Image 1 (cartoon, rainbow, N blue to C red):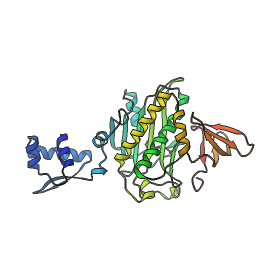
Image 2 (image 1 turned 180 degrees about the vertical axis):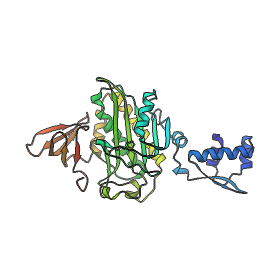
Image 3 (image 1 turned 120 degrees about the vertical axis):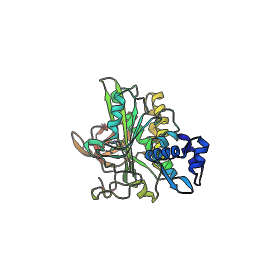
Length: 326
Ligand code: BTN
């Protein structure tokens, strides 16, 4: 019963069960039942005898309905699958994709029990503090072009964070987002493909939003939007802003058939260039990061022999950009 929610949203004061019942031509018991349903969806509704009901925590409401209602996009995030607790949203989206779900379907979790990061690392995803979400894309591209989507995701998230919070968000190639030198966002892009065709891409985005503390081993490495600004942010507004940015950049990417129109913006945001980096892959070496190509590779100049090499995101880990070199 969406009307109850609409009435409560519009009213800054209590609305009695009787009044709600009258307006919707239902009994007070039916109103109470609906209030219980809304509470289960995550809405905080105060009930005070002789006064009625009042909606609390407006901006902080984080659930399927609230996310979908404020989504200002055509495809991205129009259909949200919301989980209180799940292993990893990337797997949820994989299952949904294999069942034929539409491009733009978004899985969002309050908590992940087996959140994963790049190169087999775990991604801590505690209850209620961060954004743990995965988006389904079905681009008609070759598998070799997928790294461009990794860059695109990073750019969209960095832009949205800066717009919503005022914090300066830098991208550590390919798509870690750093604030004041510490990592606040990680993106894990996974792909299902044939030799010459991508079936679907999963953009898994993890953002430490209102996290107050991190385990000791992440000291000086990880941060959150709250720790960097002293402010608490609405995860809902952030998700909606990210979806809007992503849709815009994705449309530009599809129309051009390349990342070329966006590479300028990406370079401006990328803090890796001009820094000494340690490339760890099949071979490990130290190099100067020179450029990022429109295809998404990092161009580096080796310090040992002065030769330029192109580095692919899936293959290596780059160290040396964060303050403490981690
Ligand atoms: C990294 O920096 O290593 C990437 C971290 C990606 C974390 C996100 S949280 C949502 C999605 N589900 C996961 O298990 N991982 C990604």
